[in-house]
Image (tube, rainbow, N blue to C red; front, side, top):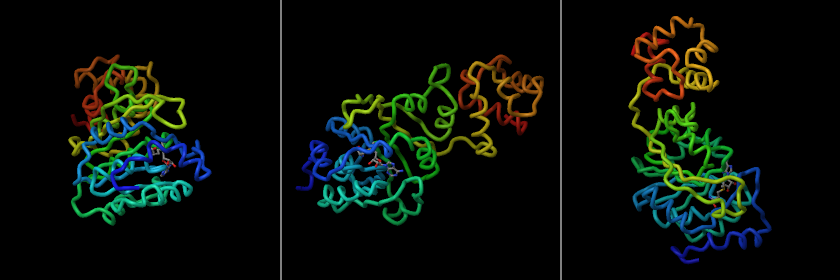
Length: 288
Ligand code: SAM
């Protein structure tokens, strides 16, 4: 294969057959077979020759090939040894790809960044994610300051929750926590026919731009739990959700809400991240 000659995307079924392989459900294997979506990913990720890119789950190497053509270096992690064997053939003509045979959830990504990428590189994470690890991997990646952009193919409903806005049905604890760390937006809707095999769910491309943390909250793990708790019962008021988990009286919480000029019947889904931060700080640390 000549460098720059795109072919894996058109040959997905053939490559699987030739290697006596099939898509494995347990690894969330739905391969991208639509070239326009790959072009869209490169465009939305603004991938350029100075970028170092991390890809999670290269599969047959379809997206990896596109990324390698447009970027400086691609570091990819694949859990499935059958895919590793195929990748060693499909991507053999690219010298700017590092393939690591590992479960991404067990990898020290920061250490690998230092090992494989030049110091002070511009790092992007771009991936057609296996759906079952989307949330845990995202929160791990958000802890790595050198990552400037992430672009993920995710299940539509999850993408909508992650980018959810107050007073909508998609808005929940995940929306608030994502918004704490990053600005998230859906940049493209992707039909299920763009994959082989065709999945049961629709997908979206989610752009995640980490915030250079604007917020300094006391005790982040405690705040994370607080956000999860106050969204646990959607139909309850904020006061009732708080009293279900913490030893405050309704009067104490009412006082905090009134100090912050929120009605006492307010529900979590009506509050922005900034509002929730204020309630949290005032409630637990007596500070706005
Ligand atoms: N990138 C390919 C594409 O777009 O056609 C394949 C995407 S497929 C949705 C997800 C890929 O992630 C599969 O190749 C699967 O084997 C791999 N994978 C699943 N779980 C993984 C994990 N924990 N660590 C690394 N790779 C994983």
